[in-house]
Length: 322
Ligand code: GDP
Image 1 (cartoon, helix red, strand yellow):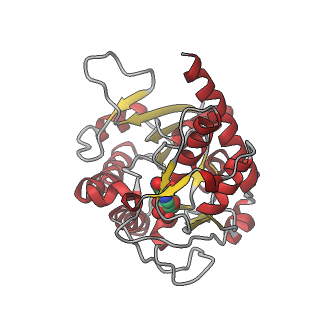
Image 2 (cartoon, rainbow, N blue to C red):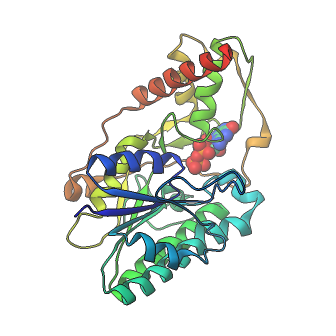
């Protein structure tokens, strides 16, 4: 019998890579998306619509899919945007997880089946970091409505594990990028602009705080860690990152450098991209993941910037022809 996986947020970057990965492991993959287009037609096969701000059909979806593993990736995941829509972010990114955990608890009781649950926790929870690098024991200090909502979901996940003995785990993933990253995130915003500038379609790139530092890895590497987390004998929480930190400036250097341009000639600072509270530095200590999951990232920082620029060059060239 094929194992059945249910991925929430299947239309996002991680949903894409995780689906591919699980299919390569011969899973039967089902997904939940909120990107409904009413009136346009039936949802694609194995795909269900649910808005986590509401979630009233979750019981029904669980009953239909009968999953063995659930990967909860759905969220309002943009930090800057979460300051503009904090209550909606709390509903989707915070209470949405609770809605799913509660539906799952009911489903487990009814079906007498044990399901493995993965919560997409975030390095943003470390926020104003109290130590560096950050590990599983580092205290949280969230700095945005998004991060506060993720802290809520993190603790709900642990509380369901401890209260009901559920197999529920947190993967605390540091920033992970790819050509499928949303265009409002800084890496993709940069690589898209690099391609457009190189092809003569844009002159300037406007950014906020370019001194911020992040631990950036490749999303394709990180979905394997999600899966490994759910394959352990006991449910547990893991930090997933590279252990290296780089500034936005360094990413600019690498991305513009990939097409032999000097970023300083094109980048301007626009305070509209500053955040009311900033996370200045994130750097993972992924020792536990290395030792217990035997997980290591494969794509380096330079390779990541280059592969994203190359993908955006191809896409933008096609756009130009059309
Ligand atoms: P985050 O770590 O989840 O907030 O991921 P982002 O890619 O959105 O942002 C990473 C860092 O880049 C943050 O510290 C931002 O303040 C900084 N940054 C600087 N300029 C920009 C910009 O124009 N857009 C975004 N999204 N981030 C920017």
